[in-house]
Image (cartoon, rainbow, N blue to C red):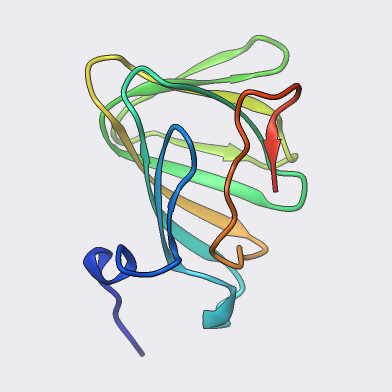
Length: 128
């Protein structure tokens, strides 16, 4: 058993500014658990086109609000108590409301190595 604090992660390479927010990679591939857990902050008013080609992701909203839109144009409202699941390597838009940052607990399978970063603003979704 072990514990890990957000403040400890902030002092390491596992604290990542991914372009439109930050990610504390609390549990990564090196921990041998078979999945990754992140504390993810999506900056207020931001929009990110994302696509995880090698990972499944589930995100549980704990603060703030926003929306996720699939490439067919279906928009899903995200607010505290909502989980969204990218179970088909879904390319998507992630948007945080302008009023405040959106905070998510993100789980990835298979696990991230922990230092991956998005490249936003290019054609197609940022992927890793």
